[in-house]
Length: 356
Image (cartoon, rainbow, N blue to C red; front, side, top):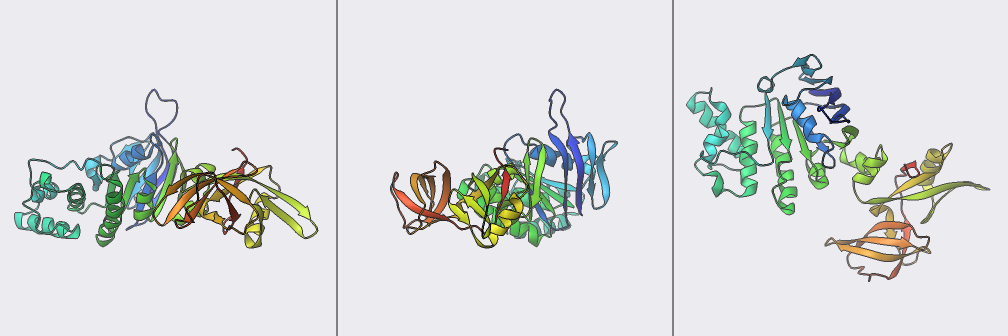
């Protein structure tokens, strides 16, 4: 692994719980990793420790095979060849774009410095912007200048701390896709911190979900969504609810029952395998596991609906009292309080101890 974090722990004096608690993950060269989680979960502390701005009390960080942080070693930040992009861009307002981008290239001859500045500005789609002032640029353009400045010295690792948090929602997702393209074109290895799932899904090859200092899962977006390792990941990623599930033994074998009826096919085999030998369990039901079907025998009352353009996100209450979510095409515009037919359509069965 190009970046290898092993059993890392970071503690602040006076706090009962470590800010980072026994965290391990790795990034291959050219990969983009994302740390996501609620405020105060430790993701920014972890990023700052990788940068060399916070000391680790336990564990180890290796960059390109070399130990840069351990309980007995702290390589200074300026010797790690790490670039950083901050949420406030940190551009120098008195310098034009060219001098902002070239700020870390003072050791290069003037012509070589100018060529590198032009190269990275072209990479971020701002060719010829060298003489413009930062205040003349939009928020998205300023963020690209900050990215160009971080890439200019050819760092071995790029760290981005919530770089889009000051931008509007639509621009954030679009810029996340653009930045991913820029980082891939630059063959950069990067670690990115965000609290926005759409950003994480748009930019990350691997995503780490953190909570209370611990890394609950490090995987690609598909795995996090469909095969969450912990109940926290299942609850934090995507839209879903937990519903009780039971297994009964009948003449035809195991029968897996949910509030939306029995689970059939390969999903039933998955459920039965996960349920045998355990106590009461809850089944994770994603919004895309629940299908609106007028012919279904199970009915649900529409409690809330959120219009998403091509679809609604319905919050539904079954006659049994269980609440589920469902993505429904937006031409099915049902009233609050209306009862509609629903059924389960499960490809992945994920269960957790009930109430855990």
